[in-house]
Length: 164
Image (cartoon, rainbow, N blue to C red; front, side, top):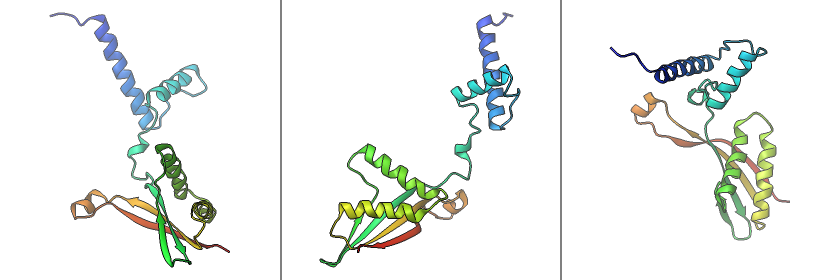
C-alpha cells in the first residue's frame, strides 16, 4: 500500500480549510475575533474567494428586476408616445437599468419619477402629459410555475406629470 504524496495531502488540507471557511461564511460565523490577526486573515481570504458572501444571492428576498416605461401624450396630434428602458448603447442601457433599480429602494419615488419625466420632456418637447410606469419582473414560485404561472411584468407604481 502506497502512502499519498505530500503535495496531495496539502491539497486535501487546503480543500478542507476552504470548505470550513465557506461554511463559516454561509453561517455568518467568525471563527476568530476580527481584531486578531487570524480573524483579519480569514476575513481577507473570505473576501477574495467569495467564501464570506453567505450566499445571499440565492435567498428568497432578492429584489425583483425593475424597469421604467414612459408614456407621453402629444396634445397637438392627439397621440400617445412610448419609450422604454432601451438606450443608444449598452453603457446607456446599464445606466438606465441602474436608475430604474432605485425604485426598489426606500425613498422619494416621486422625485425619481419627476427626474425621468424631465429627461423625457427634453427628449420629446412636443409632449404635454407624461406618465411614468414602474414595473417589477415577478417570477412565480416553483409551485405557481407547476400550476401554469409564468413570469410577468407587474406595475408597482405610476406617476403622472403635466407640462405647464
